[in-house]
Amino acid sequence: MRSRIFLTAAFVGAAFLLPASMATAGGPAGKPKATFVKGDVDASTDGGTTWAHVKRGSEVTPGDKSIVKTGDNSRAELTFPDGSVVRVGPGSQLKVEGAGFDGKTKEVKVEATLVAGSAWAKVAKLVDDKSKFQVKTANAVAGVRGTVFRVNVDRDEATVVKVYNGAVAVAAPLIATDAASSNPDGSGIDKSGRKPIPPPFSPVSVKEFEQIIGKMMQVRIAKGQSIESAKPEAFTADDDSKGEPEWVRWNSEMDAGKSTEKSD
Figure 1 (cartoon, rainbow, N blue to C red):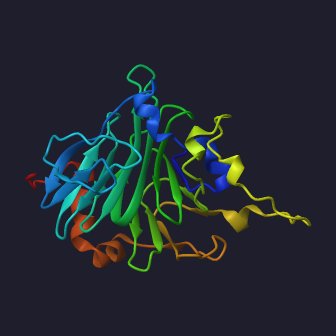
Figure 2: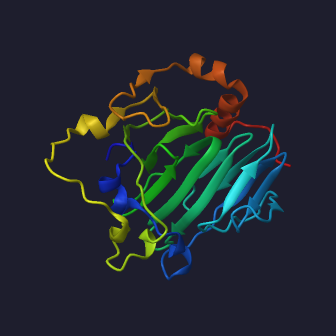
């Protein structure tokens, strides 16, 4: 099966979402562990009201209000039970909303949101179509199929997705309310809050809600920009390292198992 990241539109992505309560509601369980910590790294389980310092070996409890943040010149690596990792760059915030893993079936259910800054993911190959690994931003949802990619949220709130292996379908994020996860029919969509679209109806082409980018391709989605107008473009390793040399170097070495830097 070809590796892919799916950035799913609302009506496509609903079935991909993992309720944040899954890890504690009898479903597959799993907590990411901090396997590398450098500088000021803190975690909150109450939406940022209180914070605790994250040390190497600390577990991060997933949930609707679970946040990991890094200070300037700080970074962290979170390793999930299936072996996938998400690294959080300097000055970043990552919400870890769901982290499910079934040791028997190897089924993975992970959902995280990059609120600000940068994240780099190296995702283990998922065993079946039921497994899902998502990294979201305000502009996109990345559903992963065994690949390496990174996501940045720029200061102007644009989302930048860069793919190093695999392919990405870039589309609008799933829009849901707090009531969505508890919807009686299990669809993950709060039907009570939906507003009908008056006729006449117009057909929508795939291109209008989806863009495909492949290996060593990138796409930048500005705040409020349509997917159709977000043009993918190629990038080289040299171009990539010039923009954020330290971040790219460190992640590349970590991915290759060649980093000699020690965690705090």
